[in-house]
Length: 305
Image (cartoon, rainbow, N blue to C red; front, side, top):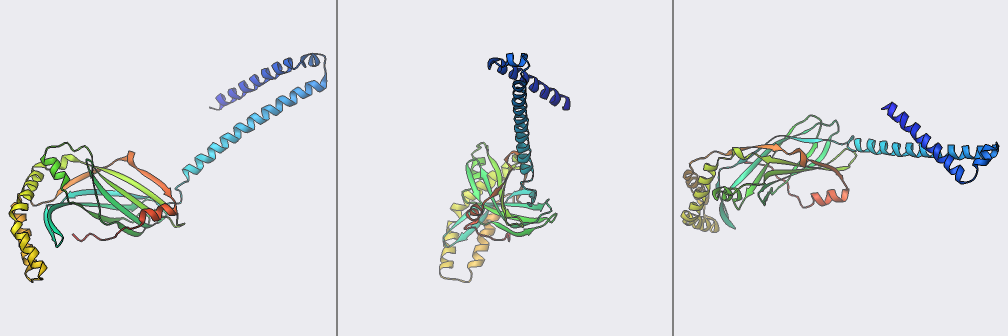
């Protein structure tokens, strides 16, 4: 590499010398040089050396600027924390009957669990974590965000999310034997460093479809459709008991939920493996305005089962 640079520099100087001779010839000073006119010779040499000096220094300046940009790029996150996600798992929960005065539904939920670790020596502060699940074109977002006040180096924290699929999208797609083209989990982590600078990390995890037990999901979905018809009277009774504040409301609700559960041939959750997509990883600094916009109107809760 050094030899190549040396010969390159020599070639540049040779080309400059030829260019200076042609310039001198065109300007009519070659006869002065041939006649030994010292002033003319000195002027030509000084002009040539000045050009060479400016050329070399301009190249050095460009190189230094490129090196500085590279150093700034390499050190952009030197003083930042670096949260990473480990042991991510997704479970399809056994369908349950949910009831409220606003309505009822037999739906399933996805339970997302993972660990967050900080591999940097710098602590991460006020971590906001959001999760969503995409099934083909249907996005299922978590109703709440996870908040970690701080995360120090090599200190693992566990997180979990409940993702409610009120439309039973996955069950419908599988029951109709449709192709599941997009099936992945997206996580976003917003945090601050000790100097109160803000950062955003986005990650994507693809769901392994080989873990999906299709026969169980098809059975679940068919029983859910049946129950929506067969349990109509039970739902009306629950509505009446709740409206008048009857004390046996809780017992009737539990019996109705148990009756639906007994209709299912499989009563265990389905655990799915997640694979991180390295091409989707994004990490960038964000302004304070962007930080407030992204964290505005978030709700925080804790998974209780």
